[in-house]
Length: 117
Length: 111
Image (tube, rainbow over all chains, first blue to last red; front, side):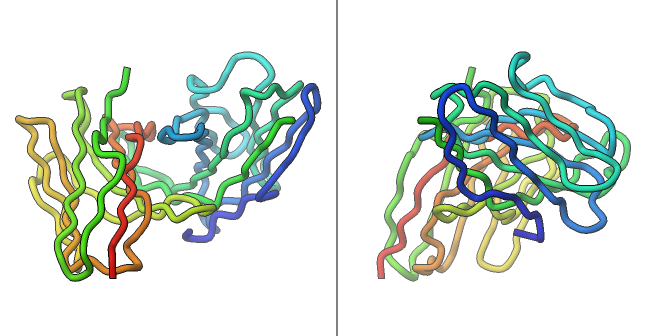
């Protein structure tokens, strides 16, 4: 999958715990996107980040969810006080610097499957 | 509000024959379309894309056709191979990074 790394691949949490999902983009890519896939559904956009900036978090629930992409290190998607409905596959994608107004192909990682007991 | 629809949840095709996967969309502002292939327990893999200024794009065994007036695109795989068995997602964007995905079509190529 074009070098996007995600870990862990599988994560089990009990209700009320925190989940931290990590994503390392393709080397040289400075744009990261997080998507969520619920069972039997397509991927749904959550958030778009550049280094140290959240560009668009319109697809992310306003409570309990947060994302960051620090200057050094991977992007992190954090879910606090998880509930059963958070169980899903979370995919990270990355792209190089797009031209203004253009769309660049996003390359996806293998995903993290979160199960909330 | 499903802006990108893949109405066939599954499709079976004999090896060597053509596979045709369909995708319909409702948003006339979409100008970039992509197909991704996904194996179980893996992330989507980019397959082929098409800009709205074109009506066809070909890459080896894969061809994507775009009919803007019908708001319809299709992916043709010929000849189909057993290794093509996967879930195929259609995605679209309106000049931005925000991809809208369909729900996928599971293709099974029978040997």
